[in-house]
Image 1 (cartoon, rainbow, N blue to C red):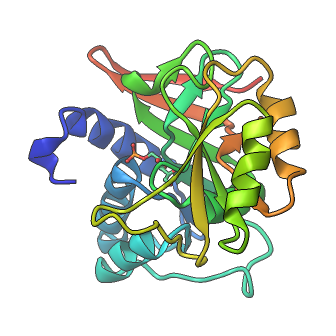
Image 2 (cartoon, protein in one colour):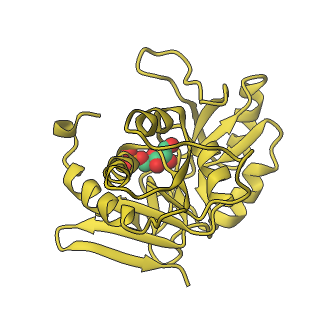
Length: 233
Ligand SMILES: O=C[C@H](O)[C@H](O)[C@H](O)COP(=O)(O)O
């Protein structure tokens, strides 16, 4: 997305730049995906140019390319057991619990693998992403294997979702970095996100859902009055 098209770009930049200050020399850093995470990568590249040395693991080919082009050294799980700090965006953040919906950019599987391996997950967003209950505005993206996806979609429907297969801009089925598909599952307001994550995960053909339950350690939300911090108890 071009910056001029994004009315929240300045807020995203502010949150991203604050989060980038949390990175310390020698850390293994998880790089998120999306328009907000892109500001973190840009800010980290500037810190790298100023002499900060760290290693990064990216959550998508897109973020890996941005980081590589800006001179950030990339690594992988073959070389590191754990990640010290991951900074990523989100599509919805539930007030209080800090549970998340992620994956509108299609990177949810790698993002969840990286989040699960991270000692600390910092989520950055503009204030429009904060909701009282997950599902208020956003469908839950679910990554599924292409084989038999119609059957997997029907099972997701049985859980109560209106399911639509994601397409890209030219109208062909969206393909993730892992070669899978995304089914966007609209459940409306979600009363029990942890239970729903579990039930979705039990369906054969599902690889991962974009529900991130009890994973965020810290959320930085940029609004008109500055950047607010929310820490998970
Ligand atoms: O798959 C994409 C990711 O989960 C993004 O972090 C999420 O969609 C937020 O993206 P953006 O910062 O562009 O709103």
